[in-house]
Picture 1: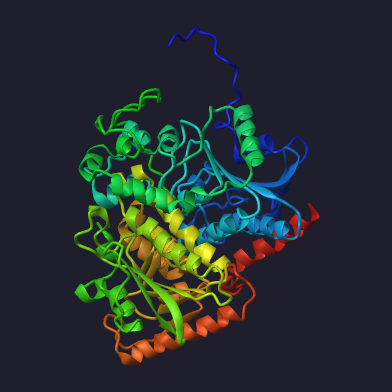
Picture 2 (picture 1 turned 90 degrees about the vertical axis):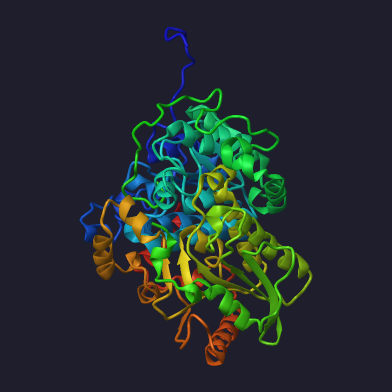
Length: 311
Length: 280
């Protein structure tokens, strides 16, 4: 690519902090942050382990309007403890979604947008993080009966662990090419299953398996957007306008089981990323970037999150 | 290096889910059409029909990463199928029959095939199915007889209205196996164990878990690996009590496990959030 070629002006969404993302998404002038840092709801567990607790526990919750409709935006700060879910941050997300569902039952339609940058459970609060994630799941399942719950995974952290499951529960899921979505993070699979099963240092391999482009092709996410504030917001508004899908992806077990039964296991093990894309033949060895995807350095430095379950 | 580190599992411990499932359902035959790793058994509870579900080890599982009772791709989507089928079958019923998830799951499956095909989505399907059943009024009870770890527990058990666990050293509840948890937090297993002694949510044992207020009841049994008649009677009585408790509770969410004494911060966050929300 010619470095001198004119490029369209873009405002990066990925580069925004969680609080900036919420402000950029909600209609201008409408966001009202709930439990902001001045409320000082911090992790009670991190200081016991010599870790400084952030005053918002890494989650920004704001009520406001989206395209004129009542909505709550919940953003995880991937820069704090790897976006890990602890007791307080988890309770903020679950509690806000529970209130949105309550409002719907009271005749006040309220949708939700989740900005997911998280490796999953914060291991320093292990079982309380896991419990909070189960409550987030329950709240999404409840709320999405009334109004869409839109998930956005922009990057750079991606979305893993129990929050990967939460992404799978969303009514609509938006990703960038830079984002990744999965259950087990690369380092954990390498630890549990060995480097032959999963090389956590092999970035092209990881993106070919779990990147936004692959997830969209495989029907595990709905929209691939560029890293651009206006495009992300436009896509979120379009998802809200679409409303609650007739059948959520997580209720399409029949389709996915049919896909599994069609799976050629031998071919799939050879090239799992390709085989995962319905209707495509497994022809390309694993570890080669999907055409059009940004090629990263093979065997680059593995970024191993220190704090979270899955990344 | 694997889930076996979680408990000194002999053959008996590895088959706990199966043993309790068989005992509580009087050895009723599992439904046909499910993989060997997923046992779906319809049997009586409190004199009426109930569906009992367990994920169990299958050494011949076509997915090699799911041979020790892990919840993998097939298990996740088949769990969803089993639960949706129960809900659909009782769509018009005024009395929604219960579902009992018997939990002994070492972990989710760890593998590249699983990630590529969307294991998170398979687990989301199971979560959504259990949540749908609960919201539709089916009492859902999670009975933890062995390991309840991480994504596997989220997919099978954690959406229950009530959680019951055996009070036994073979029961472990956590977000991750010890070796991986140590590596990810850049600590030694010994350091993790020392921390867990003073930080209850980091511990693996069921007493620490119970102290967080997440369990509705703990059960003392004599033979957790191979339950005898008295053990089964104890569990049966607890299931009936849980059923009555759920039926008398108008809440169909998970509020019942939000114990302000066990999780004060979780309760305080919700209380303050509610105030601010209603002002906003």
